[in-house]
Image (cartoon, rainbow over all chains, first blue to last red; front, top):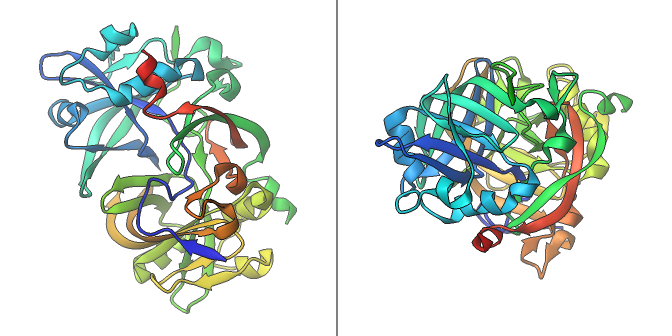
Length: 191
Length: 191
């Protein structure tokens, strides 16, 4: 028997999503980093990612003016920094100075990425979708950069080494990645 | 040192995303279910979720004609059924008959949900965004329905009991959820 929990996102939907840090420059060139969990891959060709931000955020205005952003995947050892990026605001804080992390200027898009995090996705803004409280920014992926020591055979990221963090909106917990359960497009053939 | 992996989504981005099954009716009222991993929550108010589908899918046409869909979160014990929903096509298969799962008619939206899966999110189509290979459908959440035995104090879903499946595009693996690493909006205050 199912129970209705109403029309909400937090405390209802079991939708763990990887923690990603949106990095942008403000109009003076100051780099900013923000923890954003509403987003992800939204198209394979052109390869694109989406991230939804409230207008109240500093990052929102940075993307509107710079038309670019990067999405950075932290390893779990950076959980405190990642969470801090979602608590403080770039309006009154230099979050890179506070955390000691390094903003690297992308040579492909007008945004910085985080040197210490294992995966950076560099995006150019292509669509802006007004949704109410949130605005969804969609960016075409210009490149994905991954730390060499995280790659298997120099080619594919090793998930266990990257060790991403998941955010779960129903209980506000961060989780690690669990055990391998099977292979996509294979295990279903057993039916 | 970071290595460039180019502009792709598969085999590059470490972006584990929860496996969700999109359920729809076709023009004859036949229920269909499809495994879709490009999507997630995209706005808090109005509470909304996004899912990106290729025009080649049966579900794409169902959403265009019915203007509604549900997103269903399977427990890991349904991993074979969930993967099968991404392999077979509703064009030539009755996937509910094949899997033995039950399509329940939603009383809120013009789409079915899966009785046996623990979480169902009922959405009415509000935005259609053309992105290239994929079309992104955004739906306003009309209700979230969760199996009563999965709720803590009758209120919030218990993630461990729901036991969702994650799909990881870089290595095509399914993962379980891992250990709790900390609390969001709290652990970062230690900095």
